[in-house]
Length: 157
Image 1 (cartoon, rainbow, N blue to C red):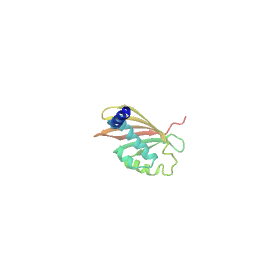
Image 2: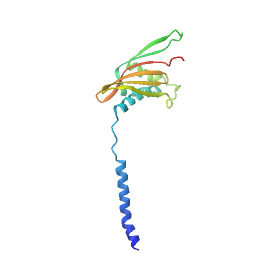
Image 3: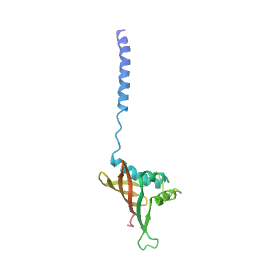
Image 4: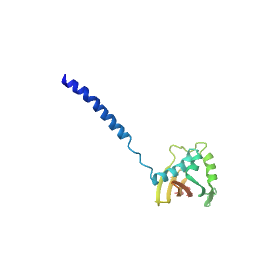
């Protein structure tokens, strides 16, 4: 009988201790995103805006003064053609490039490598379905923004 009384007094304390411990564990502070996290997110917004037909993502991560140039093979096979694009043209591209779903947004290539990062600027290589982009970013206040992109389609092997 004494064991039953002891257990009935101790059991609530054990339960309270377990509940408090689990709450303390769940309430651990979430670490702030690093610059590398923010740079990767900016590049993901860029590529996802195209794959997922989401032009609003461009405004989140691409600077309004964007300069973008790309190189794709000429139709006649005589070399590459040069294609320039502004922020607004990129936004328009996101509306129609994958509108028909020819690219699976869930499985589209998104290989991101931060090549170099300082406190204010960064260089990233993005391997996407359309080719390889070299992306220059700058920190605008506390936000990383894409300033310049130079890209080309994958070379014929």
